[in-house]
Length: 94
Image 1 (cartoon, helix red, strand yellow):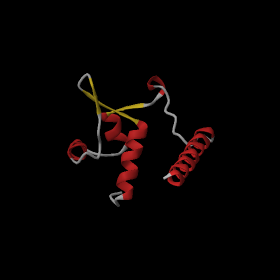
Image 2 (cartoon, one colour):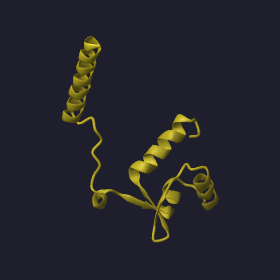
Image 3 (cartoon, helix red, strand yellow):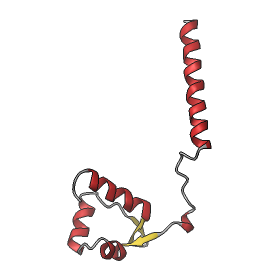
Image 4 (cartoon, helix red, strand yellow):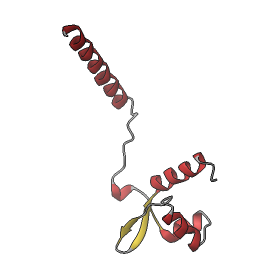
């Protein structure tokens, strides 16, 4: 039992050291404050991605686009749109 506990302690120390190293090297994705992040409106998304209103609504139903609803308007952060595009590319949709 003592041997198992000492192995667990070694593993936990290794995990802690790796997390410290990851944080030190900047592996954690630090998000910018909300005021500094680019926000996209529904119209900007449709214009830049060259999609019609019906395609936009279809993507909402399929949960490809997940907007923030602010005062009744759909808004997106740029990194959320990039993640959606990356997922579509991964699945072979684009």
